[in-house]
Image 1: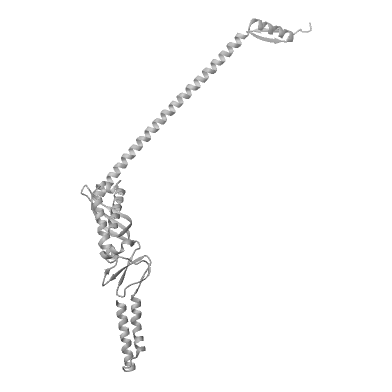
Image 2: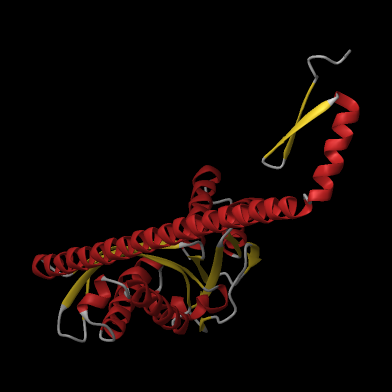
Amino acid sequence: MIIILIGIVLSLAALVLFYIKTRAKIGLPHVILAVIPLLLSVAAASVAIIPANSVGVSYSPFNGVSENTLSEGVHFKGVFDKVYQINTEVQTKKLENISGQTKDAQYITMIIDVKYKVDRSKAFEVFKQYRNLENVSTNLIAPLVQRSIESVSTNYNIMEVLGEKRNNLYKEVETDLKARLAENGITFVSINFDDTDAGNVIEKAIQDEAVAKKAVETAEQEKLKAEVEAQKRVVEAQANKDKAKIEAETKLIQAQAEADSNKIISQSITPELLKRMEMEARQKFGWVTVQGGSVIASTPQNQDK
């Protein structure tokens, strides 16, 4: 609209200039030249250029807001229509002092970063309700995050929120917020919980509980370690006992084997065997002496006699 007004002003100024110079003798060529700025402004007002990562929402003073959004690129539009650009890139909103109440009537305060973007297919609805991204950030994102925290925090007590079920709460908030944003034409991207605070008194109580729990865990570990060491000593003692028993049995077996061997040898030496051995010795050595069942051979002193 402003462009057309500028064109009209320029065209009128050109006509006035021609009138002054020609002294009231304005011809067709002058009129055509004077109208050129108006035509150019009309042409410019009939084109809308939508940059990358954006969509265009067209508003007509005659028909209102069009539900058909304009994609990236060049588009023709009505001369009096105005095209609003809605950025569809990821936006970040940092929220401080977001609070919620737990099921045991304790309050928590959070610092949260939320990433989101306008759904291209629903940019028309976003524009109708909020006009621009600044209004979306202030009037939509912050209240919805607050409602999600309030809705989910009542499912947990304060110890769970700050302890072992913290991640469960975060996941529930993410799911709840994603659904709330989708209802308003906004695509959820991510959420990051920078800090969760429950006050100094609660924080100290939780810290003391954690210390006590750690002490119990340490004691349990020491007890388990002692039991393992005791069991290890029992096993070692049993192993040594078994080893000594095996060694004793081995010696007994060896002694029995030696005794059996000697018995067999003693039983095998008969008087006949000794007599034969003596005779063989006499033939070989000349004379022998038999002592204790053993044959002792010696060369006689007067062998030549």
